[in-house]
Amino acid sequence: MAKRVSHRDSMCGVARPLDAIGDWWSLLIVRDAFDGLRRFGEFQKSLGLAKNILSARLRNLLAHGIMETVPAADGSPYQEYVLTEKGRGLFPLLVALRQWGEDFFFEPGEAHVLLVDRKNGLPVRRLELRAQDGRVVGAEDTMVRLPSA
Amino acid sequence: MAKRVSHRDSMCGVARPLDAIGDWWSLLIVRDAFDGLRRFGEFQKSLGLAKNILSARLRNLLAHGIMETVPAADGSPYQEYVLTEKGRGLFPLLVALRQWGEDFFFEPGEAHVLLVDRKNGLPVRRLELRAQDGRVVGAEDTMVRLPSA
DNA sequence: CACCGTGGTTTCAAATTGAAACCATGCGAG
DNA sequence: CTCGCATGGTTTCAATTTGAAACCACGGTG
Image 1: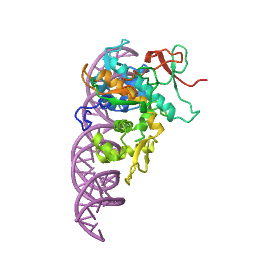
Image 2 (image 1 turned 45 degrees about the vertical axis):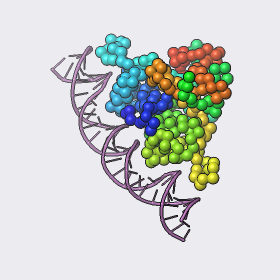
Image 3 (image 1 turned 90 degrees about the vertical axis):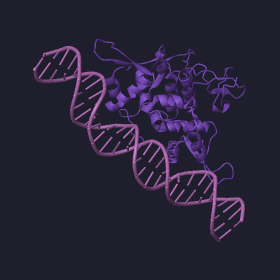
Image 4 (image 1 turned 135 degrees about the vertical axis):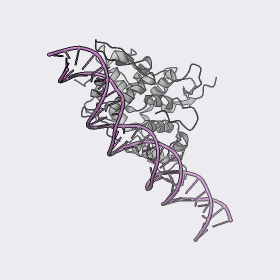
């Protein structure tokens, strides 16, 4: 699972997280976890994937500290899978993915779920990247740089 | 490539884009494209992946309208691969991924590249999701809802 | 005790991946 | 013209991964 290494020795800041998530199934599991799913069976029913695959993905998410098992919530003798701090850190990424999907994968007028503010039910704003001075910046306004100083 | 369908008939707003990107290699290609790479050989050298795989991924990105080929920039008789509008729409996602990586995949003090403002070289801010009223909201402050009205 | 729900692991065929060899095309030099 | 070579792929084939289905374990419950 951890093989893809850019030809330059250490993996860059984008490749390293990608390697940790593993594959798209993992991200869908994380999304379901944000939606409150916790049990093996819940994930399996929601995603409709084979149990062995789900098992492997959960193992990988545990190994990378993205999820963790907690002993039980109700009395049942099973464990539950919940997001760690690191896992919850994926929220902006999921939002970015969802907003990209809204922009380019639905016909105008086609119904799709919205991410809304719990407080008042209004849709959230779009993610915007801002510079230190508050300007909204796009890809063409930025570059990557070594830490330098 | 387009097989993963959540057991409910139509793919949700997260799964559909995931399916389009295909796999992590595709996202790394897109990142390199943001960095200005355009030629088959440039991508191959940068990513160090097999040529057949790169070929397949580029085909997939073209098929999904994330990249397109343009006849040539310099005089060379080859084509170049550039991001479409849809492809450029992935910028926030890449930023989210990079920031997550910065947060959880580097030892404090470990050197890593920074995304900086071209204008003044200062690092960009963190992505923040805001509600209509401007409050910064996290996962626990939001929910998904059908379009309803 | 038999039986069921939950949460997995094992088995095995099919699909995908990836390294390496091969092919095609358009130059530029001799 | 022809040779060599750089670029941009495709083909081939072994190895890995995927995924469906069968199986297993274990704790209640009747």
